[in-house]
Image 1: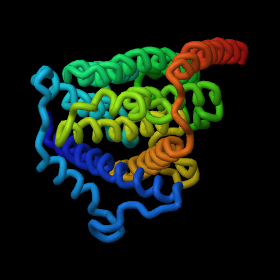
Image 2: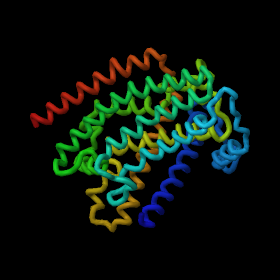
Image 3: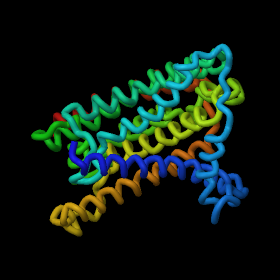
Length: 336
């Protein structure tokens, strides 16, 4: 592959890992602000070097290995989680002229990668030989399967709008979805699909109030109870990578991705490709950071659901709502 591809990929991975590290710091700072207390402020100015200190601590700690665990699988599970979290971002268009991987299946690849994350959580819970970890892993399987259906119906409504607006383009490509929003972002045209997708994305990322797979009051720590040192750190980083990925996907599918409200006024499409890339990446990054803040805000605002409530919302509320929204939207587009 060309040198430009590998250079771009390496740069994006560095940016992605840095964002994940500083999202942990942002979570602790925002939590402190919400709870009216001080966050990390000792390591570096304003605590900005705290993520580096956390990484060094995890690298130097002993990796505990339970005697009843499956050693290879216990190592594989966190590696799988980090890899899948990065793989989902590969198809996102970063700007009008910049994307790591496009292909012809687009959204189908994305759904496949997202569905595989359940294997990392289930494998991590089962491999340690702990009943608490196993329960966390089993919960993750039921939760992800339940909310993937709702997420899929919301995505189908996005693809439907894309196919109507750009009939000559492949609606499965994320770039086509973004370009179809030049005349109006989809969260305005498809508010019910947007709400369904956001709620399902919270559940897919295992974030509060959908963090039943961890539930420290019930399961000690859930699927990662028996993990320590850098293995626990990998699960920890993967969680925040999933938050960043979910935020970037929401921004792409419903808020125009790399598009900005000023594109038409400033004539961005006539700019040099380099400046278009910088402009598009900046807007996508800004929207992603905003949604990361919302993920953190919700975690420190809403209490965790009971498990029966979580399943009831997925099967009896979100899924029927997503299907009805898809049918009504299709009818309105047919009559328009």
